[in-house]
Image 1: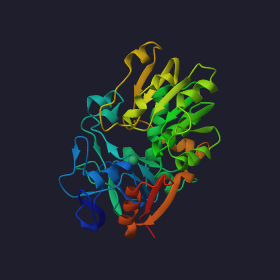
Image 2: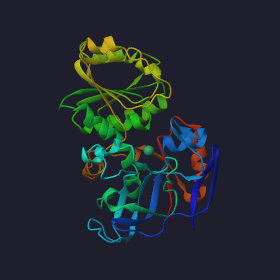
Image 3: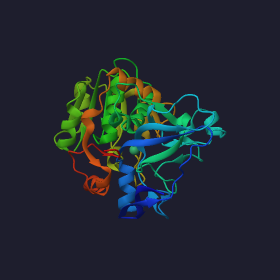
Image 4: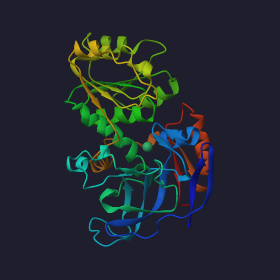
Length: 346
Ligand SMILES: [Zn+2]
């Protein structure tokens, strides 16, 4: 038995003892968790008890953005040793599956993903995880940054799907945590400048502190007007939808240049209307992003190189004993909060 932050049912969290695996089997490592990020999906399970087809039916440990230290290694583990500082990829596919063989293990229907019912997450002092999905942190990458790799990986997957070319102009709809991650990955991937839109001045202020990110407040001017003005009426080379709002789909192809790419990242809760003629008339290439595959090691390379600094996005850190408070604050959705983290170790 060990302590964990357990979502008992919709709206009810408790810090209590729960029975979790304690021994590293073949190919697995045991990790002492140091830091866990609070994600929108964790908060959504807390406030709504479900995300689409994933419904909470039994108590579940929350948390999937984590970093820690290897404290034990099972047999057949060669890439890690006791004492290594690591971060973990929260989704574990069936490596024999057809999707895994194709290299698209993120869309393996059998993937087991932390804190997605019925799989327990990692807001608990120790977890067991496959070594193949555990990544050593470079010495200059902190645990707090290590716990930011998971959300940043989504941005990197989006930038990868966009097939950015050096000097591209990017545009990102939505300056929430994922929108900012996408914009930073687009810059790192070669965009010369990236426009990012939102309704919230607070969120845009956070995004705008990064050189190369240009905030656009859509309560003042339509995003498409700004993009047209800045690109001589041509449009952005790569556009990312990261708000998840069905409203963002209205006129979305006005943002993109003829032959450009549109990458869908945000997950609308309701079906969204797509202007097919708008896309066809520009021969827009449309891509979708579901989590990530083969990204964590490259995300760590970028963070360690100093080209991407995620530290300014950590806007609050709570002790494990205060983790319910952390979730209450995250559920309040303050526009000045990007990422809240929970520190497991004193
Ligand atoms: Zn997350």
